[in-house]
Length: 236
Image 1: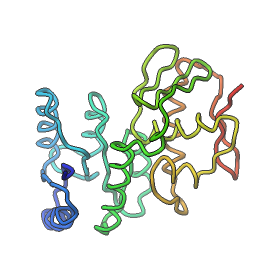
Image 2: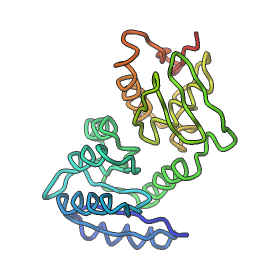
Image 3: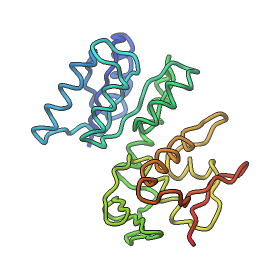
């Protein structure tokens, strides 16, 4: 079955190129060139309960409404996977996008093969739950519980809204509680790709998770940074 992809970008030539490339890889691509039109379309489908896109490829710079604004509005009602297209080398755009709930990013001008690899990684972790494929139990520490079967996280009985990347990152840490997990391992486990030099994706996802749990845990630090090594989830 083909994956349904929404591509939002005002570069008509690039859209045609990517649509053709992804179509040859068994993906069905819909294209919108205007930001305001895109969010209206997404919200309309959501209101009718027919938002059937498996992932959204979203450019950072758009007419009508910026990609970041679209992402923030989308995250108010949906955890649909989002792959951001950012200016190559612009770390600020990438970090802000990840902090706002993007699952991953690709720099522009983008290589279609790299985009496909990142997109497939997102689809694998959202449809196949690769890091929990043989896990059905619930892990619970400090009042924070993660259910691998339903992919839900609760903190003191209050459900937390995490993106797919954040869920996989947190699960990877909690499953290995008390052990240091390197950024390289976290990237492979949670994001389904290799960690590259200067890649701060995991750092940003960890920061977002910390913010979402800090309101209930206060100053208690349960995810610690191990300088030069990675991260550790405290199990005591």
